[in-house]
Image 1 (cartoon, rainbow, N blue to C red):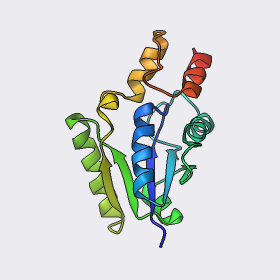
Image 2 (spheres, helix red, strand yellow; image 1 turned 60 degrees about the vertical axis):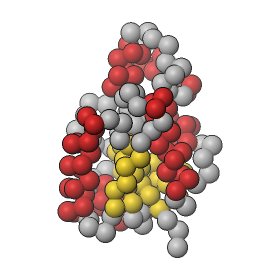
Image 3 (cartoon, rainbow, N blue to C red; image 1 turned 135 degrees about the horizontal axis):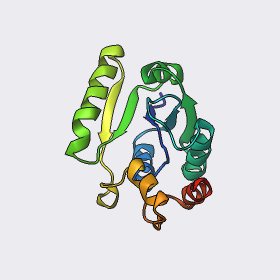
Image 4 (tube, rainbow, N blue to C red; image 1 turned 180 degrees about the vertical axis):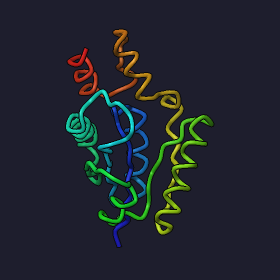
Length: 158
């Protein structure tokens, strides 16, 4: 039996912290689906197509990772893909309440799907896509935050 996990998110943009969590998940599961959410309730900086393309570029070196977009409930997407686990990154205590409420809601909707929280390496604990977009607008060097293809994409948006 192949173990499949979803790593859902907005990934607007994907960061080195996201990549760190993805690499950890890829070591734990036979297949990880990096699941790029179509509608998140957020005003995204990048379109869905741009986010998917960036995620594909970033994840291309991890053989057991597939990048897919989804719309609707993530638990419905998990059922469609055969995933039994959802991966969520947990950076700090400030993430805990939000992530716990998501996990509990998903558990109510689909009791058979487990949520696993992975912690990024210390280097990435403080990173967020929102902070990175702000740094990009201010012309900061983003080498320590995002992969080169994301730096290029952010520069084109500026």
